[in-house]
Length: 356
Figure (cartoon, rainbow, N blue to C red):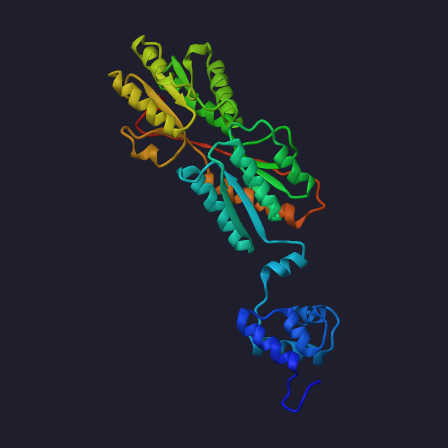
């Protein structure tokens, strides 16, 4: 019973509890005013049918007591966490750091929180990250899977739980999901075109991981580039970068005068290739030309500066984020968004100038 002093014993106890725990809850306001928690919630959100007198009482008390809404509780009621999971191979390399930057900018603009996980190419780390994010009830996940991943059941679990997934940079043909990649195949053709047009015929390829779609596409693009120019594909000129002996094999081809140009899976392998070529006493680009892929900062720090295929990494991150948010905001849409972003040949010092 409320006394002349204006508060009940229960009210007093509630105030003591608030002082101890340091946070006011909706239930505190509801107890004090003698209304339901749903009434308080409607009053504070200015939604639903409620009398103006009750609304005013709730708002004034909430202000007096310094009530701050719990965003996690609010989003739980809305069946949204506003949390997004991101699974990347790593983000120390410039490429994935730019991808992360693009994703983060969109998520920040849209009011989402990003939880970043790194699997470092290990399947067990990837599975663990995906399961943890699913347990957190994230609204969706953007992922660039590990090279060793052949079983995608952990992503299938997400899809069956109605958690949208967007693959980034790498795709999985076994799952129906949206994805964004760069259009690597035409980029490879541009690289081979440039090497052939500048006088090269013995073109080798330092190949990427076999388990990655990007490795397969770039190897296929290399083969097709040779075919377009009437050059025979020779298996011995394909050097598997995952093999410990690839540098020794490249060096042997150099000494045998069997290679006059090298197209590499990425810029880091191109950097190592340049070191091998120099150790063989060959001049770049006069005797051997080199083309990389991605346009990482290392491409401009090298000597000579590297000709490479530029990938729009930040734009890819933005598109992946925009796709995922579209899926979240349109849960009943069954369409998948599949996009390939164009690449561009950036000519520098590791290849000869184009012959016109």
